[in-house]
Length: 523
Image 1 (tube, helix red, strand yellow):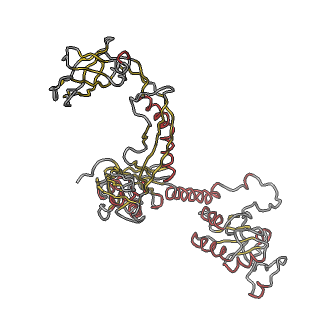
Image 2: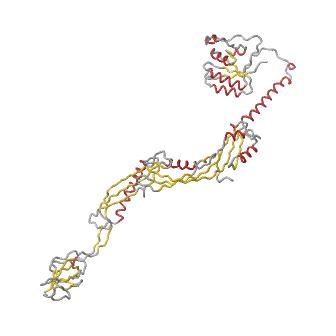
Image 3: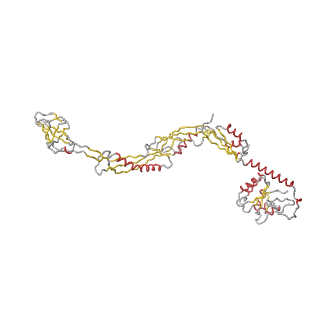
């Protein structure tokens, strides 16, 4: 009886892996025949033939090769395949036989390398329909009976059963999800930063001291108004005594003197007459009535009210400084603040951008109040100005900051937390890493108080778990996961594309996923 062989045509651009896949798919075929065109990419080297031979032997298949290329025929024979130069030769059983070594080396591409098959050999059946011989019509009683088809029906049933078993073995997959409660873990770390700290330090952070400054002098205008009261006139008078024995006579403060026109003044201090003859004293006076009217010319104050007749008074110089009430323009705080605000609105962001540009991608901690403005002026608040009431203000916007790599800081916090994880456990993903920056100085010094909070779970050997679960019933697998694995609080098994009383027989078909849930594990 002939051996049924599946006829497979090889495309020119197919790879050797494609031929292996096609061998694997034909699980029910004992023999496979490849029709190989010239310049086929898949079979161009002895290595490709040996690889195809290895897989054919592992699948228990006999391989035939149909090719008109003598080189491919020789490689097929050396590998252990049966070779045919054409489909007609394959149909007629004209197999190429292995020549001697010298003959293989001398084969030319246009010379067929085959010999007639030995007598009595049964030809291999090709997948295409054989040529039909003309025959006379048969009568109904000559048709085959139902029992003649029984072997074919049994074979089809066996093939269907084998396909069903293969479906149950190779297709099913399972997804196993383990919910694990982590054990809380926390640590606090203090890190000191300075520009002199080396980059690879384990207990410190390299920093960079930054400074930026902008300054401008702006002209301001005073807008404040205040009422200036009347100012009394002031000056000096000389009081003289005609008494020979009046040397040392005391004159009280507040003695009133006046002009003939009635302008009155009061002495601003007590005095004592001095001199042997014509004793005198020079005393400051101020007008009793404030205003311009208190100004008087020299030698116009001549009378002492209720004074001693022996005393005489005179003002050798005019009295001056008397002024009437008036409104004055003065600098107020808002005049300066408006200038500072207008300048700082544009310059503060500019200075901040300058600081950021000096340390791109790094975290900046301001020194003191960070970017701030200061002001100096050629007049102070409350000063009275004359028209055009202008004054000059110099506004300075400056800032200092300390820059460092925040990723480096958080990596150090994570490392500190990892060092507290017990052996055989692993730190869970995404721990909370925070820190506070304090003590930033202009020379780049800073203190970072770090806090790391996370949890750890046991290290699960996933390959061993999958190897144990393969072929187990879902109930026994579920019990194993909950009872034998530490910290596991829930286990879910989902089979696809359909549920079976057992898990896949191949561990590679089991996908294991471990997820952490909130809370602490039970003791």
